[in-house]
Length: 217
Length: 100
Image (cartoon, chains in turn red, blue):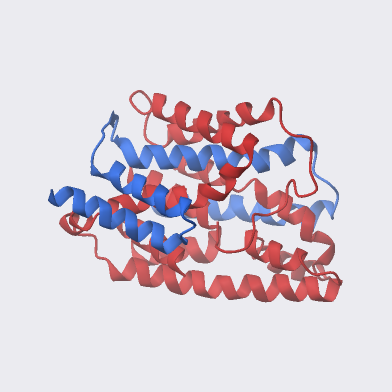
C-alpha cells in the first residue's frame, strides 16, 4: 500500500522513531490526519497545532458513523472495538451493500484488510529510510510530501464547493507562513470552508458520504 | 517526545470522532452545519498542506525544485495516475531539476 510507505518515509524525515510511526498507524488509524500531524511535528509546530489539524481532518469520521451506526453489531463493547475501523474505505465498502449482514461483513473485513496493510507498509516506510539529509534532497524525497497531499486532495477538487474551500485554505495558509508559528497556518486554513459554504450546492444524495474507495485518506 | 504527545492526543481525539455516533447517538443524522464541515474541512486543510509543504522553508516562502516536483505530480494526477505514480514522478522531477 504505497500511501502507507509514504507515511512511514514522512515519519522518518520528521525524526520519528519506528515505534512512534507504528503507534500512529495502530492507534490513530486515519491516513491524512496522521500525515498532517507528523508534517507539523517535523516542521517544529506545537502539540496543539498538530493535534488540531489532525482532528479537523477527521471531523468527517462523524459522518461515517452516521452511515454505519445501524449496521454495527451489539453489544456495546463490540461497537466500541469496531469503531476503530471507521475510515473512508471501510465505510464505502460497507455502505455499498444492501443487507445488514453484508454491510457488517464488508465494513469489518474491508477495514481489517486496510488496517493490516496500512500498518505493514508504515513499518516498511519508516524502517527503510534512516533519514540522511543528503538522500532526502538528492532523491527528491522532500517533494513526495506535497505530492502525497495533492493526491489526497485531487478527487475533492471536482466538487465546486470543496474547490473554493481548497483555494481559500491555501491562500490563508500561505499568508500566515511568514508570521505564524509552524502548524498554525494549517489549522487556520480551516477558515477556507467559508468559501465553500456560501452558494453551496443544495444537499445531494451523496453529501456526507465517504470518498470513493481506493486509498486510506 | 512532542511526537508521542501528539500521537496520544490525536489517537484519543480521533477515536472519539469515530465512535461518537455508534456509541452515543445511534444512527441519527448530523446537524447540517457538521455535515458541511465534514465535507469541506478536508479540502481546505489538504490544500494548505500542499502549498505549505511545497513552498515554506521555516517562516520563509521559497520557490525551489519542490515546485517542479509538485507540478509534475499535478500533471500525473490529471492523467489519472495512481497515488504511487504521482509521488514517484514528483521525486524524480525534483531530483532531475536539482541535477540541472
